Length: 185
Image (tube, rainbow, N blue to C red):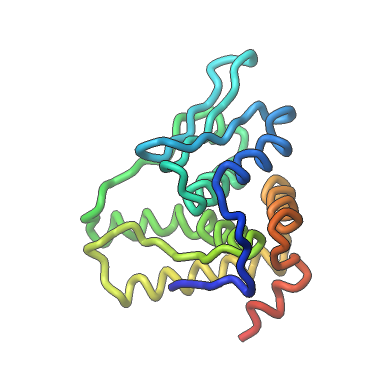
């Protein structure tokens, strides 16, 4: 499922996402967002004098949004663990492994969808499994949109709301109050 923004913005550079993230979260959370990685990774601080790091793939705008979405929903205990304590199974997962992946990914991908709308950037749901079926991807896509609607109706987590507003302000994106109409059936 690909969701196109309502309007485009010429300034979709990942370093801007990094700067917005730093302005919002460096002081209070001691966390930095850094591109250029071969694979995404969250590395927590070892002690109070260090920073935590969120690494996203290369300079990909969507990867930056996705990794921030994981951080925005991770509670304090998860933020103390490498990669938030999640496991990863490479492409070629069986149905049980894929279901476990999707259960963990539905909320961050819903946030990524909303962040993409705030930044006027296209969103592509990812089941991250080339061996998966189109029917399974459609089902997962619907789950992501449903979760996004729940966030719109019930509100975003605190850090996600701050980040959403910053993206929206910078990229002139879809304001939260207008999202209900965007997701109207």
